[in-house]
Image (tube, rainbow, N blue to C red; front, side, top):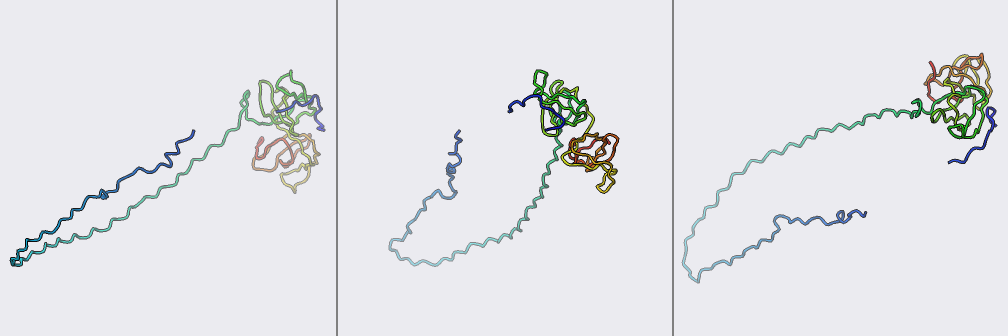
Length: 241
């Protein structure tokens, strides 16, 4: 059972033929040139009617041979200019969705303002209370907005609606299922400042987006925790600084 919440109600139940003939039609008939079958006339040779008159041979000059045309030089091969490849312009990064009321990015982090926060099944006081949170600064994630109500999710994945007045914008964290070592410097070999048991809640002071470490504070203790040891910050997210 979650040590920070108590059950106040039951969870409600959720939630033409296309003309293919054209594609298979025979190609239009095209008459091939030179195939019109023109008739070839066959003339019978004429023979003189049995008259044997001697004839003198007449030399028929041979037709003059036409001068040979000089051979044309071979055509130069066509030069095709290379086409540069088309490079698509990079798409701009997609913007995160924003809340319909505040215009702030969703999802985003918040923390509980007091030790007594009601989570309801819907955005309004007419909806029943399902959980009562008893831990100030407990981190939650806001997923939706409706008027003065916010749909939030806790570290166990429980979702419900809380009033905006019960939330604050400063960043906090919750130690996960294993004990975490608070160290004096962002180094696994650095001196240990404190051992934090699962369920401990503290403040996030700063986190570099490229660093696996976050500077935190728990009561009077300050130091560095690995970001993968806590709940309340997204991978690669920067905080403070």
